[in-house]
Image 1 (cartoon, rainbow, N blue to C red):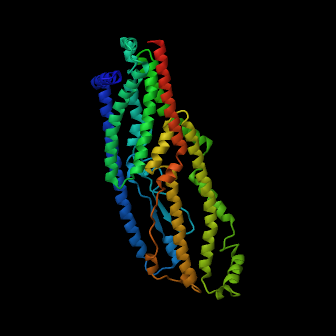
Image 2 (cartoon, rainbow, N blue to C red):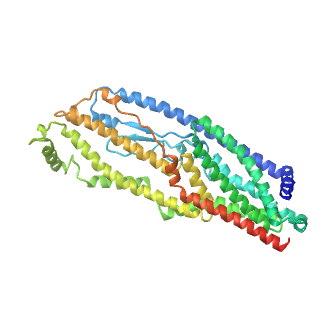
Length: 469
């Protein structure tokens, strides 16, 4: 047996006998399983409700009978966002972002049906999930395991004996990293396996997304382990190492993400809902409506296009043309205002990305949510697709009115067959390639952290070897 293997075996035996480590590991495992079961039940309930609501919405829509197309456009349909199976792993902002959009004429409505509105208790540090356990509790467990890995040898006097007997500092550090990594990998592997099973039970999973998600967490925990072993190398006692690591955990894992979120809100404040919709209303009121001050100009344009000297002579529905023009002008306002709003969200994410230079956790959180389909870009994709579908439905209904409602306008009643020709909304999430393209900065930051942590622990090993203690 090699020296490294012998040290590793000894460390694992001691860790197995350490009741603190065993109790903490079992507690972390129990919390992870609880989080997964809770998420599994939540996603299954959400998807069951979504399927039932889509069916009811469709039945109501097709049961309208003969009706004016514009009245139907106001009666409208709903767009519902599905929860992917991997949302079991990290719910991200799903609880705080709406999952349903009412696609009515003239108005781009916000997403509603937020799960948080139905909760009576909200965790102050985030939604309880597998991601929360891995991000918050696993680093603390790694700190407890690593705190004494070298410092305890120094306390016992065995560190000097090991170095004097020819055990190189590099071999010693490799063995200590391996012992910390083995426990972390074993526990993380069990948790990940349960997570994969839960995700698979919630629906089809993307193996590539899951693999990248696991790699990201593996890199994060490797960073934590390397830093923890480095602290243990420098500490005079295991108690001192544990206190130092607890302080680092509090700063890097608990405080930094919170401070970063506050800084992002300060650096790029998003408007309140009241402010945003007031700006939209003011902008819409400013354009020349084809129903009011812009009517004469628009009427002249349409008569020149379709022929005729009077509105009554048009071979199409003038009211339908007005509606379509009003939609076009309103959509320009929505595009401008929502583009500015989404730019604010991008700026906030950029601030969080910079915070990853202080702690690797914000970078991991962005990666984790993105790969789980529960981050802001996925929410924006849902809202944009819902808006595209809204415009397509309204245009389809206006077109029927324009073609068939000449002379009748809003008294025209469409054949009920028209309602069955309107397709339901179907969300197409961003592909893995698109998701990864937006995460390259976070991935680079994690790689830099990992390389830096490994260099740090190896340099500390050289210092230990030179000091001979």
